[in-house]
Length: 288
Image (tube, rainbow, N blue to C red; front, side, top):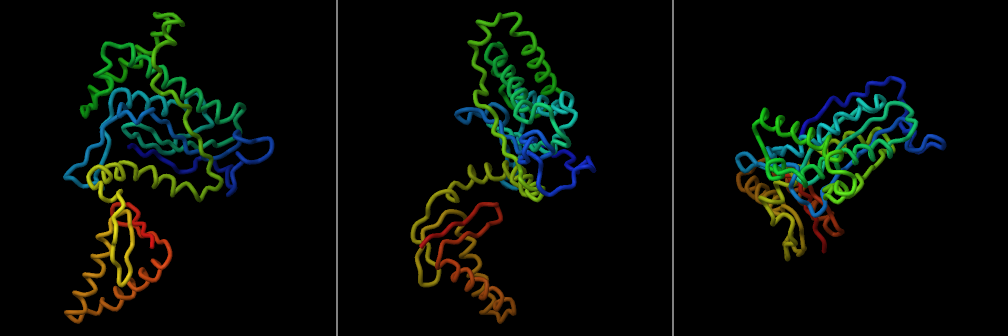
């Protein structure tokens, strides 16, 4: 994950609603786009998630040379399209999230831009399929100098592969990235902070899912007050809140009133379907 400067740099764009939806400028005018590139079958060929100290909040991704080369392709977009700025991105083991800011009208539109990016990463995928170093190109490497060296080797190999193989043999190679990246336009500027937060939380969510799989399984008969629920998420948070309340009451703590009120409000909300957020960013969903 490598956040970039996502400050708006073009003072001419001040509208709250973006031009991608305006007649005559659809997908071509000034706008923000959330782009997602995926690897079919969720193959972890772009990197490896690591979780220092077993803490999901510290999770990060160590890139493979292929993943690093894909990021290089993404960051080169402004060289070919000066009207576009890469605001933010996050590389995951099997996909890539990016936020693109189109600062002014584009002649061909964002679809053409993303398709060009897709063709570039497909070249990298075919090069990995044909290279005798395929295992190295898809292995995580935490040593930056070696990672960059192998990434450049892959990009150089990809640049000349088609000419050396010929079209017929070249297009038989597995491109790896077989699906066109998904493009989601943001209808309002106010969506940007939430989108960036969602992107940044990707490593933490994956680490939580792997370290605490029970958070993602249905737990039966969760008892809250006099009711019983089925739940998904960190249900222990609900129990912890009640424990603190009981402890404060026993010691005459002033915090008990607030905590009792919070628990009572939660129990009231649970008369219908409800959602609570835990500290690991995992929703607790309870149904009657």
